[in-house]
Length: 592
Image (tube, rainbow, N blue to C red):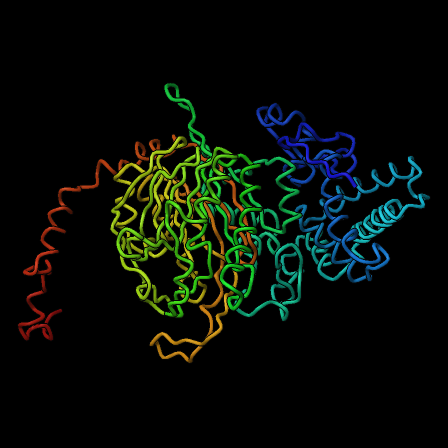
């Protein structure tokens, strides 16, 4: 079947008005102002856009997604359509349902599109075709139409029945957290979820279990407001969505806006962040592990480039398992030159192809200084040149993070890299716990600071959604926080002197990458369980607008703190503590 990969942005003006009228009749409580109507084209189109993002797809775009699912689920399986059990058909339907938004309105929209495709096949007399493709294609659409028809009548699989019941009734308890948790693109019983994996994301958990009105208010409270609204969705070309489906990774896209100015044009830069799990087991040959990771990440970079990303950041030590818990020196084989290493040459091809700045955090081997190892971020320019590098300033010695066995604190200061798209900096992983580290990048002029990380749930997950967001607020710049995903198990058990029994892994790397803005707003996070690409448009004018509003730089009193730190670093430093004189006079018992 042909995959329609027409590369254009989806807008509600591309909708079929007849489909919208049939599926989404205007309700009495729908009220739109004239400006909203003018922007979207009609009240009908605006109503559909507000209720279900997938209704903004044209027929061709919807059919392209169905084609992807046909190829993924049918053509690659022996026996074609006849090789699928009823349960497998239900899994196909659930996955497609989730992929397109996961609401009852999604069901109505998709059923309309599927039925239209069925009519097309019938008109072309493909139903009676004797070719395997024709028969298989017809059965696929027949089955999908039947499945979505059952969903509409609430007579399908337990999860979809509960979801439909909940949406129709507004009952937030219709689908209990204990019953089901979302995993990747489908749904599994909670007992099947890895114990350290948990739910896909807090935001999606709330979306699936809160009534729409309550969820809207929760979003405002959790994500904040950007220019007066919750951060908006960013339309992407259908080809990127098709790549996400085919390669099975989480894809999210948002836009931060700034107030329009009279003397400055908007400075919009498109940011991309990638999180990924390792591909092969950690006992596979090192060359095979690295090659598999690079192939997987290459697929996500292709998607980022197709989406028009200007600056892309990968996760910490992206070319290897995060083996620094083991203290085994064999993992040093993954180290490479920042300027001439295989990963740099690999990424330079993408940088040239897409005119994209790429930040590549690796384990660096400094050949000039005796092969010393560093935890380093290499910044590759949009012309494929190496602009520079930054070495991790703060090295953890907490729990299993025994990183000082391999490398020590960096020696590159707090560099800001001026690129074709803006001034950027890299605060690697553990440096996010140090407020002065964030501040120094801001004082050097950073507009976007990337925080490539590798951290696990038991240690840091409650801190994760707070720290990068706080840094963005305090320093009036954008922050992109990236964390690897998955559970990595190593061949030999290790201990970390913390009293825990010997074990073979850190725990679960919870992903959850996100972007925070200087006005305190932020995006939802990527999946906790799945590889992902987040694409974000950011108007850099917002940085100065927030500085002007809050005056944090103007009121910072740097001279006061410079004197304090100068004294603090001296051996004779004495803390400025003023004690209650009654504490040491013996009279405190008689005080009132």
